[in-house]
Length: 437
Ligand code: GLY
Ligand code: MN
Ligand code: MN
Image (tube, rainbow, N blue to C red; front, side):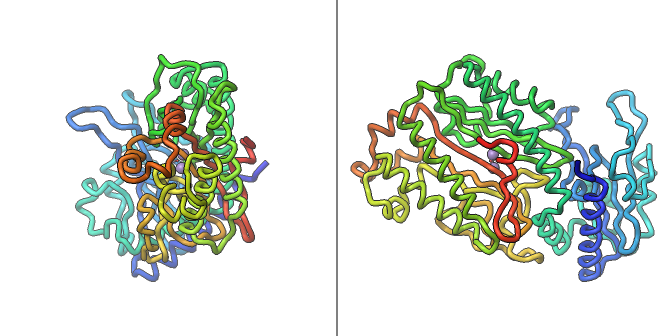
């Protein structure tokens, strides 16, 4: 059983020393981070589900709007907690969670009173989205030297954060197991989605991202968000769904087939499962993510040639770009408090950008791979008519096996996605520990 208190102590100590360093370098006395304001829909009085400012959650797992953290070098972090009396919306009591000993907590039932107390902090750098509310403060609002530094530090996960992500993997894995069973018993997309959230034990609002529950051809729409209730007994399920624990996300994809699914598609799935696992096995610090992504194209090209979808050499499959319409997204992205976590393209703590490979504009991670990074490895192979059309119309006639492509297009595609932690000498697959297949 993990000692959350000890893990959190270490996590906060890292945050405090890193904040002290950047405050002193940039000449600020104090860092104020707020949990954020709700987003109200246009011409409406309904709010979107509340998402806490991730920088706030990096310091404190407390949920809800308008809380403020006051961080000053050498002092215990203050938490000004907004806890109004309210009969419209539930205001959960603070209780006694594991993290409270690390903060000086003051409660405020009135927001204006809270704001008036935000004073005498010296030169303040503020991080958050409550700019209108704070417009009378002479604070530096989201100054880049600070936000870039905070983003950078978020890409190196502490042991506490790894623990949170592992818990999110465990929850996500239970959702995936239940969904697979539902699929194999002929369930619709909507029913599979319900099986997922029931097993995770949450509502849709608690998910880190909208589930992608794609039967058959819908797997070729990368971020398909429909939930068809009328289609049952799919041949293929592409399920991209994760869970959250203390603000941290898992992001897991599995592709399943029914026993009667087209044999070639089943072979492609086996091939992609091997590619995904081989890619994970190759991971170690010092590699560049862009090279890793390129390696995925090489391997997918080989599979496409082996499986008779491309009639060219294995070299040509990737050098001539024939893999591009089959695998049009990036191999992965950093993961943490946000599903597409920050700093994947950052080269330095100051915010210099890593070069974007011109051939891969959708790659979200372009930096060197280092110990402590957590990111996804999610190769895909899809039959996307819109992307294949260009090759069908222009000279690709003899290279692409259109007969087979047309047979497989109704089956959508394949994606397999795990979340990995980079260790000193290799990697740890956080997803497979809870979802081996
Ligand atoms: N779940 C979205 C993604 O894999 O990036
Ligand atoms: Mn992902
Ligand atoms: Mn995903």
